[in-house]
Length: 364
Image (cartoon, rainbow, N blue to C red; front, side, top):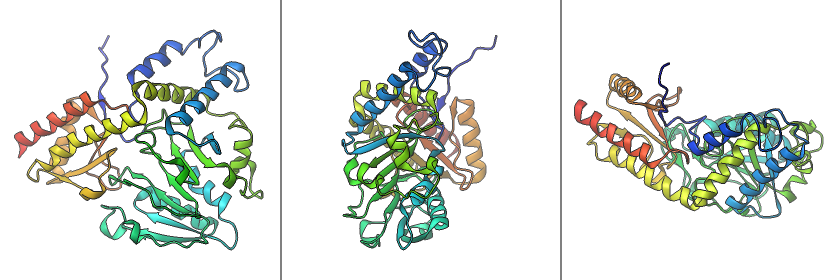
């Protein structure tokens, strides 16, 4: 039998999960506690699953300090469905919404909103190749806007908001798919936050939505119920069969984050891990070429190029042979990308940093 080993996974998503979580899920996979069956088999109306569901919500509320007047929803369809759900619920006739364009997924959200109603570009860094984020002073929106939409971290180009704009009475909506749970945030600054789980929260299949309850009460009622936030909130994300196993796995990840020290510890680790990789890039004398402007660099996704496409391919091939996977840049831009989500260990990061230094020595 061929020996199997785990690689160091730096993929952008679905991403690495904590080994302890995988081992616990493995132990509980066939029979969950005293339920006599797997989580994958049990009814979403059963007492056993209800406890799983409630525990996941309670942990998320605790870790992110979600205020009591906010709903926490577990939905399906990924962040991509949220690109349409947000405007369908809140972009009513005679209103407009403003979008900050900072990358591929921000563009997708903007394009879907255009199908629903009037939208406005509050700022864009496309002309700069999305190497940077706009300053707060560059943002232009109106106090009458239905909402202002941002993408907190850009996985493709490797940029991340360090702080968020104060939008006053205008609800701030954020796609936090790739950096939620990696640092403390003030949830009360946002009207709505959404995030696909497959980077920091758990496996693919569940999408978290955190929204101000009072705003949800203003949702349109003339759209299908499956697309209405207020319906899902009223039914505690159980209006239809939820992605039960993904929610179970997310609950295990949330418990792991709490045991590690919470989001404050995740933020410390993210800073340390990203500093290791950025340090190799900055000290390589141009062998590695960082893509994002230093002031906008992401702690989740480190993007860089090498001097030639041939050298990039040699780097990626050698990295794979050495047990490092997921380092290819997004198919739309190429290059290289190191994703440093919560489950990526400092030890794995240091192994990659040493590999990068060694590859530069041999090929510089």
